[in-house]
Image 1 (cartoon, helix red, strand yellow):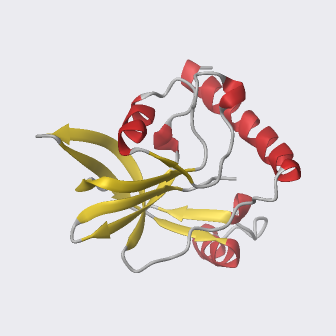
Image 2 (cartoon, rainbow, N blue to C red; image 1 turned 135 degrees about the horizontal axis):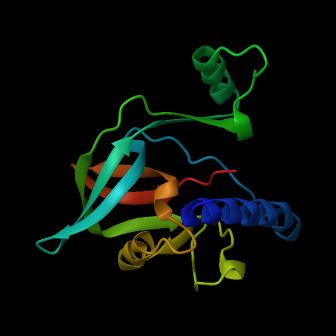
Image 3 (cartoon, rainbow, N blue to C red; image 1 turned 180 degrees about the vertical axis):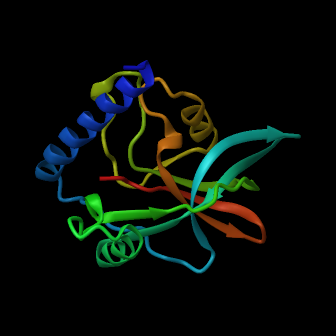
Length: 171
């Protein structure tokens, strides 16, 4: 198995262990990202700095959860053996796009899980943890333990500029 595939398997096991134990140790639990009219679910392909300005290269997706995910899943998959979206969510991304958006230097960045120290034991869920934009750039560039491109994000865009980024937790 390739190194990156092993990393993904190991990461998945750790996340499953953490979600099982962290729910017992904390009253904080997952809550869906509230919908907003100027918000879009995306995959972030890359971050790029040009002329001192940070840009995101994003691919818009449609993120569904709960009953809505089950409904869309049944409509699209049409498998009588599978009537619910696996893990309670479903992502629709029929076409891959590359849309470049500038990021406000004071954008709010909220993460759920990331590589804090380079040690697996420190990769833990902290709901909506604020990080600096520069730290987000560092994390996105480091895919040793956690590849930040694996996650969907909800971005808030105001006047064509990204002002908020929320990492979507994936159960």
